[in-house]
Image (cartoon, rainbow over the protein chains, first blue to last red):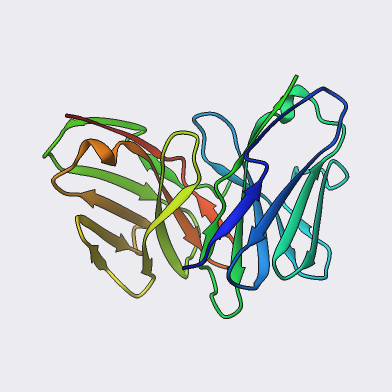
Length: 116
Length: 109
């Protein structure tokens, strides 16, 4: 089946540093990848949609300069949280959609970010 | 906000009982999906029901969809302790999934 991995699974960093999270589709080509954020005991909120080779589309209220998304290949998207602050601590989940699988997203296991 | 709402927010039942969760949404949809999330983990896709379908079954899961009321329900029959998790509905219209607020299900052995 379609497998999506994320790395790292958890990360702790100091306030002001940048953190990069990778999302990979392991056995299919992901034309579109999505990044979500989930605060404790809350639902997933879509942050941005990225298509391979083009700029990401950010949801309203998400700072594109703070959350840098790169989708350089059909199997890899990265989310970089720049100048992280404690309020950025959250669970970040990516998903990937393959060619011809409209609305069928395969989710990664998530990355727990804690900013001290 | 376009986010859907689920109720109840939390549900506690005994093993063997049925669990019903409801989802209401606000926009037109292509399909509606249900996911399960164990604490601190990623999402597991459970079932997808298209806008022209009214009911769908998968094992112990039964999903209904009423597009006129913009609502869906997920029924888990003969629940097990392993069903303990958060359950989310997600509506799809364009290329995005909009998740509901979720129901936390606790099944006691």
